[in-house]
Amino acid sequence: MLPRTLGCYEILSLLGEGGMGRVYKARDPMIERTVAIKTLGVELEDEQLVEFKERFFREARSAGRVNHPNVVTVFDVGESDGVAFIAMEYVEGRTLREVLDAGAPLAVAEACRIAGQVAGALAAAHKHGIVHRDVKPPNIMVAAGGVVKLMDFGIARLPDSMRTKTGLLVGSPTYLAPEQIVARGADARSDIYALGVVLYEMLTGVPPFRRPSVTALLNAIVSDRHEPPSAHNHRVPAVFERILAKALAKHPEDRYQDATELARDLENWRSLPRPTPEELTALRSAPVRKLERGDVH
Image 1 (spheres, rainbow, N blue to C red):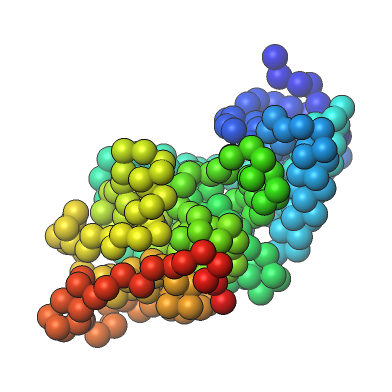
Image 2: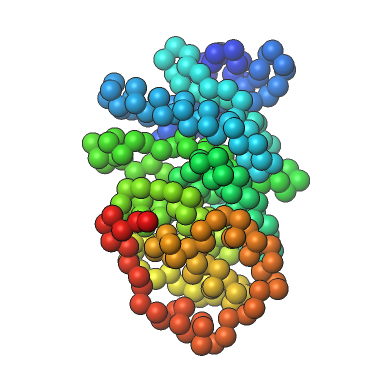
């Protein structure tokens, strides 16, 4: 059964649900605007839930300050009958997850167009001190007309104390940066890493690391080298080996330090110098500079 209302919003239909809660299509009757309503539905102990709600509201309000064409606009946050919710821009289109699930890599130009818009959204958020922490295909909407919208800024983050007590990993571990696994921390460069994973997946059809268990996957993210994208799709230009090596570096300080830098390379990839055979060999064979616990600057 759908709730009839949440706060002042009239619920129209269920758009989806997952581990964090449900998303509804709703109507704001005051201004006759269609919105998306995301509810908080994690099962936590009372003390943990209070802490999570506080952070949920605080970070959602922070995200509401980000005014950017590639960021889903946050309109309101509230609580109705004990259910915390956030009202945001309703976007017609498909998630990038749905696009990728069609089964084929994207054309290079299309992958760069999508990733470039996400990088622009991240750059705007980072300037406000907001780290997304959960950049992945289900949180990227490809709207009608091709505009890309990044959703769920800061909403999916559990406090570290809850992670320790519950052992819960929020979001798919595929897109976690090494420092989120080793040091349990995240900054703007963690978002850049996650976008690098998304870019790799768009270009090849598969993420850079696939393992039979979560433990093996997390160990690979921290310690293993990703395969060259051309190993999965020979049509990927060699310049992306350099771009992805920088975006997916184990150490945050070895990555792009600003999402604007990555956006610039994605926009200008055709004019970037092609790596020499020697550089490609070095990229593929240099020792992996592993990230140790607490080794984040």
